[in-house]
Image 1 (cartoon, rainbow over the protein chains, first blue to last red):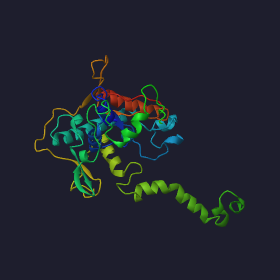
Image 2 (image 1 turned 135 degrees about the horizontal axis):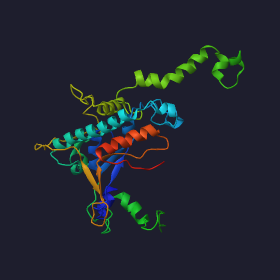
Image 3 (image 1 turned 180 degrees about the vertical axis):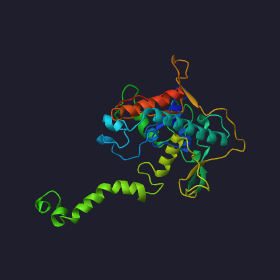
Image 4 (image 1 turned 135 degrees about the vertical axis):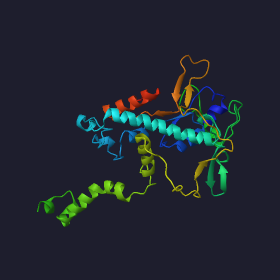
Length: 168
Length: 148
C-alpha cells in the first residue's frame, strides 16, 4: 500500500493506519518502518481491560466481562479502574516508543524507516531496507512496473470499479 | 448402566466410570495448559510475554526485565532497531499524526499514533466500551468506530 501510494505521488496526502498483533513499542517501530503512520490495537486494549485470553468471546460467557452482554458478568469489569488501565497502557507504551525513537536519534516515530531496522537472515545481518521492495516516487504514473506484483495486478485495475479488467 | 446404553459417546460405552475422568480432564485442558504448560513465548494467539507486558503497563508496574533478553538474538528473522551515535532527548511521548494534512482537507484530525482499533462492539460489553472510551478521552484521542 505504501509503495503504491509512493508510486502514484499520493503518499503525502494519505495517512496509513495499521493493525494486527501489534502490542509492543518495537512492534510499532517495525510497522512504521514498513510505511505505517499510526497503529490501532484492539486485543491489546482488551488485555488492558483485564482479558485473560480465555477465548470464549463468541459464547457470551467471557470470564472477565469484556465480551459479554450478560449484565451480571459485565459487573466484573469496574469501569473507573479499567479506564485508568486503558489510559496507562496507552501512556506507557508511548513512553517505551519514545525511548526507541530517542535511541535511534529521531524526533518522531514517523521518521523510522526500513533502514533503521536490522534483521538476522540466512545470509547474515542486513538492514530491513535491503529485504523489502521499494518504489520510486511517481514510478507507477510514469508507467514503470517496478515489481512483479505491479506487473501482474496493475493492468487489471480500474479507477471506477473493484472488478478486475479482462485481459487479452 | 446409563453410560453403557447411551449411543453418543463411544468411550463411555466401553469405560462407563473412568471415561468421565477423560471428559473432565479434557474440559479443563485449556486452563491447565495456559497456567502451567504453555511457554512464555508461545503465541496462542498472544504469548504470555506479550500479555504480561500489557498487564504491567496497564497497571503502571515496571515493564523492564533484568539480566538480558530471553530471546535468541541469533535466530533467523530476529530484528532490532539500531542505536544512533547521536540519540535525541524528546520533551514528550505524545506523538501525533495529522490525518487530512493536505490543503484540500477542511477538517484535519490530529490522532495519537496509538489508537484503539475497531472491535466487534456488538460483542464487547457496555462496561468494556465505557472503559475504552473513557481511557481514550483522558488523552484526547479516538477509537475507530466500526460495528462488525
